[in-house]
Image (tube, rainbow, N blue to C red):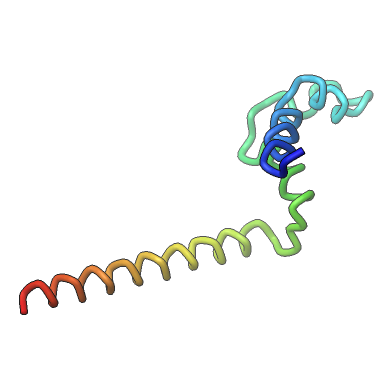
Length: 86
């Protein structure tokens, strides 16, 4: 089985009603019944992915990377514009 197919089937299973029923505690049948900021499939995926830091630290790292990429793109485009003018 290809890795992409495996990941897709795992993601599909995480969003299934069967998994949701298995995740609920018998004493708390209303657990995971509302759509929250971090729903059950996202929580499980973060645990499986080996998330070591807090979610906020991971998000800060991710958006910092995006900001660096945006700065690089702006730099490359500005250099291209300068070269066209010359």
